[in-house]
Amino acid sequence: MKLELSNFDLKATEKNTLAILVCEDKQINENRTINSFLKKVQEIEAFKGEKGEEMILYSPPDLGVHRVLIYGLGKSEKLSPETLRVAAGKAVRCGIRKKLDEIWFAAPSDRKTGMAMEAILEALMEGAFLGNHIYDAYKGEKKRTPVATLGIFAKAADAKKYADIVDRVTAVCQSTVLAREWVSIPANDKLPARYAEMVAKEAEAVGLTVRVMEEDALVEKGFGAILAVSKASDAPPRLVILEYKAEKAKETIAMVGKGVIFDSGGMSLKTGSGMETMKCDMAGSAAVAATLIAAARTKPNVNLIGVLPMVENMISGHAIHVGDIIKTYAGKTVEVLNTDAEGRLILIDAIAYAIEQYKPGITIDLATLTGACVIALGEKYAGIFSQDDDLVKALVTSAEKTHERCWPMPLPEDYKELLKSEFADISNMPSTRSGGAISAALFISEFVKDTRWAHIDIAGPAYIRKENAYCGAGGTGFGVRLLCDFLSKF
Ligand code: BES
Ligand code: ZN
Ligand code: ZN
Image 1 (spheres, rainbow, N blue to C red):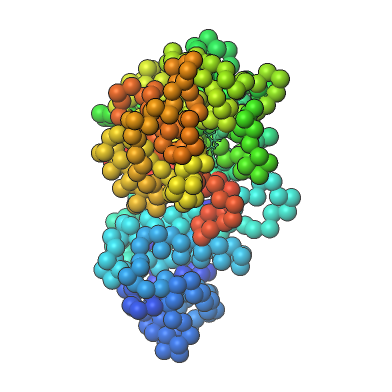
Image 2: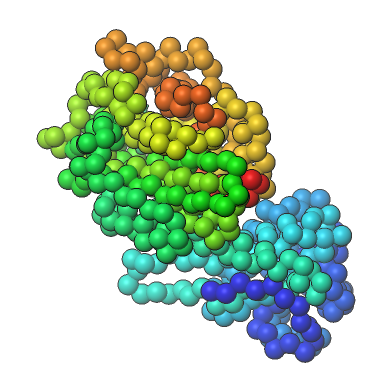
C-alpha cells in the first residue's frame, strides 16, 4: 500500500476516486473546482453534509476522476483531527467494499477549518492508512483487499511543504499495524520463543540492537518473578531487549511492556468468558516493540531501551501456588496471593533490570494490567499513573493529539497499606478489590526507585471485539502513535 501527498489538475486527472469531506453548515474546501462541483450537488439538495452521510457520484462532468465520494462531517464546530481520521477511515473501508484500488482525499482548508495544515494532513493520512488494514491471516478465503494507493490532494505549495509527513505517518502507522497484528495472532502461534523471534526479526530489519534472553539466562540472573509466572507453562519465557541510539541524545528512556501471550489467570483461574480475549495480554510489549521499530525510522533525538518480558500464564502440576513467596530481580520478596495478578510480577523484574542496567532518565511501562482500570475509565481510555506531573502533562498532550486517550489517576501513598504481606516484603494482591488499578500501579511503584516513571494501563483500549472507523476487530495498536508523538518532542 502506498501513501501519497500531491497536487494535480482535477479536471484533467484520470485518477480513480476523489473523496471530498463536507460540513453541513460551512464550506471547508478551498479548491475552486471542488467548490463549484459541491455547489451544484448542494443546489439540487442531494447532499447536506450531515455526520456520516455518504454519496458516490460516477463520472462527474466537471472533474476528471471516475468517481467522487462525498462524506459528511456534520457541524463545523465539532471538527477535529479525530473527525477527519474517522471520516478517512470510513471512506477507505467503503472503498475496500467497493474494491477500489485508489482513493484521493481532498484536504480541507486550514484557514476555513481553523486547524493547522499539518494536523489536517496527518489525521487524514492516519485514518486512511489505519482504516486500510485488514487482518485475515487465518481466513481461508481472502474476501477483501486493501486499497492500493491512498493519496491526499493538497494545494501545490502545501504538498511540497509537508512532503516529509508522508514518511513519518507511514512509519508510525506501519508500526501500529504491526502491533495490531501481534496482538491479534492467537496464543498458539505466539508462544514466547516464537513471539520473541517475530519481534527480533522486525527490529533487526530496521537496525535496532536486539538481545533475547532465554530461560537459562533468566535463571542465572535471578529474574524470579518472570520465572514464577512462567513456571506452569510448557513454553519457556523470553526477555527481549531492544535498543535505539540517537547521535545527539541527551536523554535515555526505558519502555517496558507487559508480554503475557495468554493469561488464563493461573491457579487463580479466570472464568471462561474472562479468558476469551486474553491473547491480548501482550499488547503492552507489542506497542513498545512497535514504537522502537518506528523510532528506528523516524529517528527521535533520544536513546531508547525496550524491555519486553514474554511469558504464558498457565496452570499445571508445576504451577506456582497461591501463597508462594518468590524472590524478585530487585531482591525484594513477593507473596503471590493471586496468580492472576501476574502482569505486575513480570513488570517489576523487567523494570528493575532496565533501571539497573541502563540508568534511564525516564521509565514508562505499558500494560493490560487490570480489569479495574476498564471499570474505572471504560474501554476507550487508558489510565496513566505517575508522581511526575511534567511527564503526565507531556504524555496527556500526546494522548490528546493522537486520540489515544489517557486519563491521569492518583497514586496515594496511604493506599500502599493494601499491599502489606504478613510473610513477605509485599503482596501482589491488594486486600480490597476497590481501586484495583491504583493498587496495581502502587505495587509497581515500589520497584522504580527514584527514576521518573509513568505507568499506562491499557487493559481497556488494547483490544476491540468489533471494528470501528479505522480499526478492525482485534488488537488496536494502542500506544504506538501516542509514544511516537511523545518521543518526537525530545
Ligand atoms: N490481564 C489481566 C487484566 C485485563 C483484564 C486485561 C481485562 C485486559 C482486559 C490481569 O492480569 C488481571 O487478571 N488482573 C486482575 C488483577 C487482580 C487479580 C488483582 C484483575 O484485573 O482482575
Ligand atoms: Zn491476570
Ligand atoms: Zn494479565
